[in-house]
Amino acid sequence: MSSLVTAGLFALAVSTATAFVATPAGAGAVRARNGFSTTRRDATSPAAISKRGVATRRVMSMGDDYDYDLIIVGCGVGGHGAALHARSCGLKTAVFSGKDVGGTCVNRGCVPSKALLAAAGRVREMQDDHHLDGMGIKVSGVEYDRAGVAAHAKNLASKVKGGLEGSLKTLGVEVIDATGELAGANTIKAVETGKTFTAKDIILAPGSLPFVPPGVQADGKTVFTSDEALDLAFVPEYAAIVGSGYIGLEFSDVYTALGAEVTFIEALPTLMPTFDREIARLAERLLIKSRPIDYRLGVFASEVIPGVPGEKPVTIKMIDADTKEHVETIEVDACMVATGRVPNTKTLGLENMGIETNRGFVQVGEKTKIENAVDGKMQVLTKEGGDVVPNLYCIGDANGKLMLAHAASAHGVSAVENIMGRENEVDHLAIPAACFTHPEIAMVGLTEEQAKEKVQTVTESVFKRFCGHCSTKRSRRIRAVNKSYEAAEEGYELGKASGSFKANSKALAEGAGDGIAKVLFNKETEEIVGVHIIGLHAADLIQECSNAVAAGTTVRELSMMVRDTTRTDSCLEPERVSVLAQFN
Image 1: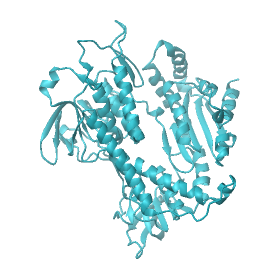
Image 2 (image 1 turned 60 degrees about the vertical axis):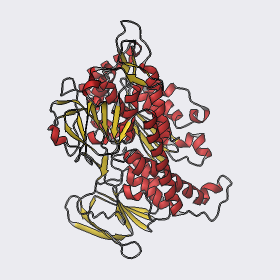
Image 3 (image 1 turned 180 degrees about the horizontal axis):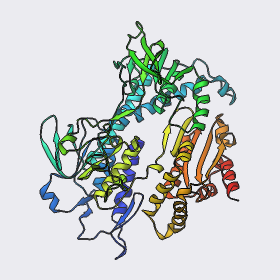
Image 4 (image 1 turned 45 degrees about the horizontal axis):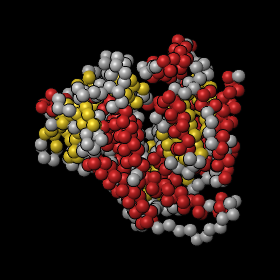
């Protein structure tokens, strides 16, 4: 069973188990802390356990008025996660899949890209004679089968999609194989048939699409986005990648491992512009300068003209990002466009509800502006700063808060919690992200540059996060955050602790000592504001730090935690010493 399905079913099991643990009388209906809720249930409550062990809602007035308790438009990772959680809460649920269960992540994104990266990583390692010689291994004549690599990615996506479809069926979620469109309050229309369906609450989860800049003629063959790149129809000898974010980096990793040369075309003056600068500099050395990759910075690909594989090259004209003057024209075998993504909201029927978007993003409420509407609750607004649209939520890429698949899933669970009357907010500062290159890059929270620029914003965000979900066990941390909040206008001193993978016995055993881990924190309160890692298994290591941020663990507490032997002498040990030295 895929990790996505396993994680989803595990979350469902936990949710179902905790949803029916009785609390002492008078303790209140809900105790929530960052997504974990315990509610009192009895014979008169609106939910009970069905024969399947899944919560089912008892007959309520809403059942007489609506076809469903909840309709979800879109069945990517966010919509799927929301559907599972809704069933665990006893909601009669339907999803409009648009015949695309799994969405971008499963079918054209995270899942197949990891398959390509896994295969490419094996090829790279087997062809690295120096690396293998150091471990006494001799390998010769390593080859790969392009069609076999492509089939691996396709088969994995198909397997995971099948798992998601099976979980929806098993848990009693009705899947409507149609495109959903808002047709009025509490109403969704199937675009293909015109049939309408009603629900007490609606969650919009339409996802996003690759952004293709003006002047780029994407034919899906020689000029393409990540959607088509994952098919690996051919491996170009010379490829250009427009954009040097995590998608571009991952595909440069795949292409160069399989024998291609790559040129990055980046509009901003630095490579990997959204990454922490210190991490980006090391990534440039490990992932770009050591490989057949060059780059053009501060230029736009003003015109990209498709070619014909094996016959005619792709032509790319570049202009200066500031002066807009022509600077260069290059010819390549293929061009991948990795310039970000845009919300897939044009066909949602938002105009039927009087909803205005901001650059296509559906606006959701912000606590500081709208009474009874919270950013994390995913409640839709009529426009930026407008009124709350009753019983309508928007999750994932379409609201623009954090365009990551696992963030969308968190949004979906949070929206369902709020539908159930259990106040819940998503803490975006605690959601990790990863780039699955070789070596991996992972991060959570703010970069060092952002932390320095937004000291007051960070402090206030931390204050809101903890004071909104306090308990007697957390009073010490609340006092610390209060202290930080009171000093917000004066700012705080940013602490930084770093550790090298050269002190990590596990990394050294695998001949992968290049890497660092960096923790950023408020020296006054010891609150963690960001963690950045580049190195072996960084995407796994970041989860401990993400959990620490979510739980309000201080940097001192994190540094004192006991880890297994290969971690104790790892990159975290110099980091621990560095942290303690700053407080002693």
